[in-house]
Amino acid sequence: MWPPVPSLLYGRFLRGELAHARVFVIVWDSSKFGWGAVVRWWDNPLGELIVCTWDPAEAEDAQVHREAKGGVRALAAALRRADLRNSVGIFRNDSVASLAALRKGSWSSPVLQECATSFNELCSEFGVEPIF
Image (cartoon, rainbow, N blue to C red; front, side, top):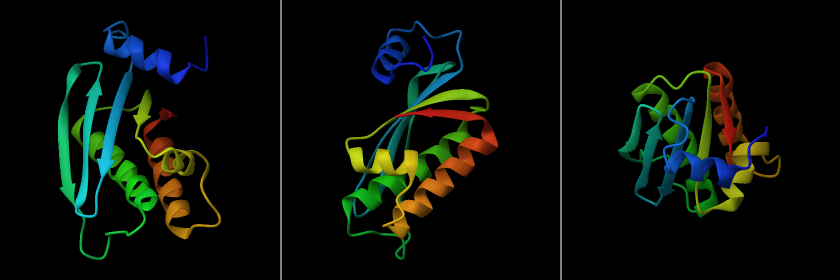
């Protein structure tokens, strides 16, 4: 079954049924102070916590902007932490609007469009197939 249904793929990952596959999961959340993410991958199913504060000029008032920026930062940090090249990435966040923006961009919001561009450039560079 391809493309995979995100919730089914995530469930299989959590049950340890994808240990042979190059699948990783990033779950993140953002606040006015920074962002945090748990990154799990096939060699580390328990995952690692990554937390970072925003630089003063980066903090956003709109939650959707913070969540989208946090998603880009979480992916960039995960790619530095583990060799996630040529894999499927499951991205989980409570902000549906930020997930949609990372997936397709937003011409009406320069912040969300920049996040989508950065996110998709990272995915392209490292061969990550994102699933939201």
